[in-house]
Image (cartoon, rainbow, N blue to C red; front, side, top):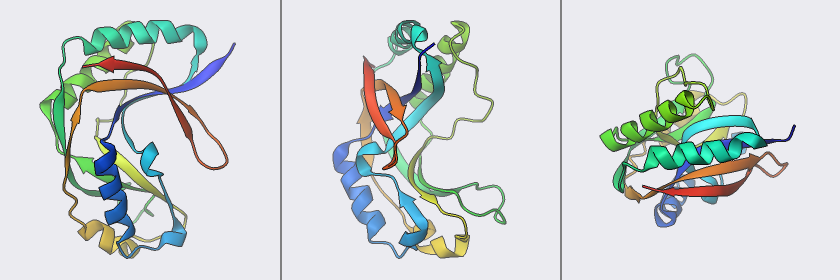
Length: 187
C-alpha cells in the first residue's frame, strides 16, 4: 500500500513572513545551535495526519470540503514568542515559535476539521490542546533558555487574513521538508 505524509494547514501572508524572518535574523541568537524554518515553509498546522494511505485521499478531500463550507475569511494576529516545551523550564528548548492570539473562528475551524475527520473514520482526535503557533526554528541539543533571552523579549506584531485551508503532502529530505499543496479549500 502506498502512503503520503499529510497535514492540514493555513498559509501565512508572504509579506508578513518576510517581516518575521527579517526581525528574527536581527535578534542576538546562537544561530549555530538553531535550525531555522525557511520562510516559505512557515505555516499554521491545523492537523497533522502523518503517513496516510493514498486511498484515503479522496475521502479526506470530501471531509475537508464539508468542514470548510460554513466559514468565511477571518483575521489572525501574532501574539508572543514561545519556546516549547514551555511547562518545564528545566527542559532544554526544542522549538522556537510565534503564538497566535486565540480567535473564535480559528478554534471553530479546528474543531470542525477534527470532528469531520474523526466522524468519517479518517483520523484520530488530537488529545493535546490546540495551541496555534508558527514554528520558526528547532533547537539543537545543548542550547539553554538563557541563550534565547533576546527571542523571548521580542514583541512581534502583525496580522493576516485566512481565506483558505490547504491539504499538504510533506516529504522529508536532507535539506529540510518539502511541501506540496494537494488541495485548497475556500473558507
